[in-house]
Image (cartoon, rainbow, N blue to C red; front, side, top):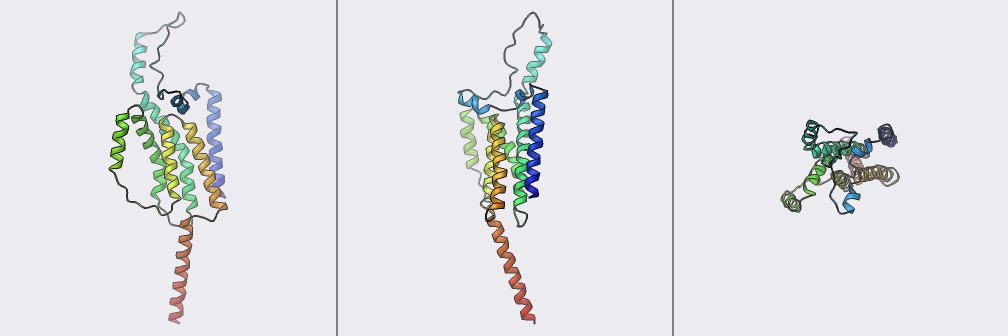
Length: 228
């Protein structure tokens, strides 16, 4: 049960930091890429930068021309800055998912590269979604490119496919500026996976490892009897 407490403590600390930052700096919540699904449902694209919005000049504020120029230059990096925040967010959310994958395979052999995949894949997917979401032509081009790439790596356990799906789903949510959806998805997946692992019959990889161990013991016993 140490894995459960580790993941639970991580989520509590992460939630506490976010809530504390929001209470201390009310504008912090505006910098987090959330609410993208609402903007998509309203028929508009996801807005990743507010620097292009017109600024009203009043008597209380004097707008200096150099400041305006610097703002426009900084806004050219708006999508890059937002993507950095998205990648950081999905990485923090997928970190416990990687721990869960490693923890449920502690008694059997498994693909260690899948741990790194669950951490890196969401950021790659988020960047791709950010690029193609405003262009139908780019979306079809990407579909053609992906269709031309064939992966012939078989998973040792069908349950591992869920980790890939969660990584992709988290990346898509981050790409459309909906980290709140990614947070709910990863939290649900972590605890539901641990529930299935601890309360269920175990993974197929565990049964295979147990059968191999029994076969090895029987073979060793047979060789011992033969030598006697």
